[in-house]
Length: 165
Image (tube, rainbow, N blue to C red; front, side, top):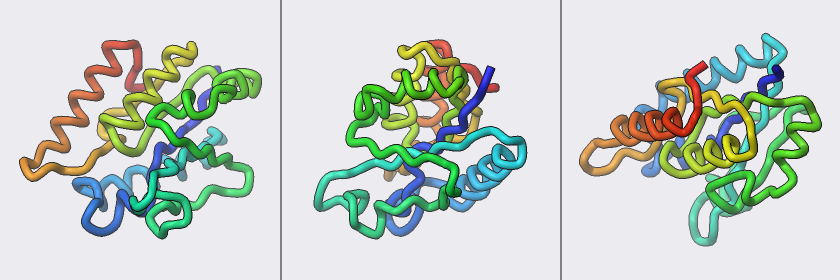
């Protein structure tokens, strides 16, 4: 089995300023450590980048659209316009399979949006999906529910077949 670490939409718009996810510093440290660990282990890393719509800060060309972590020269960045990367990129699943990947580990943003939908898309495409607990996040509401939302999404994807390791 060959695993690919997919870093979902960790873009400056979602980790800086007023729209930063809850506990952003904690998550950035965890994500950065996981990316470095994968690189050291020889696990390939791929970054997803959401192409938001104008006038949102994650629209292409806006400062918030930029990825927070810098991909290395041999690491692929896949842009998307939908919540599910496989919907935006219809040939991606086959490309990943041809490259020998059968396990996709997802970390990043936002739990209930792109992590959830891309996770479902990966499962539907026949991949083993690994969703490590505490490695995806969302924006906190005025009610402080970000951790509850992420926990709910963890449970939902596990019920669909995702694992935690």
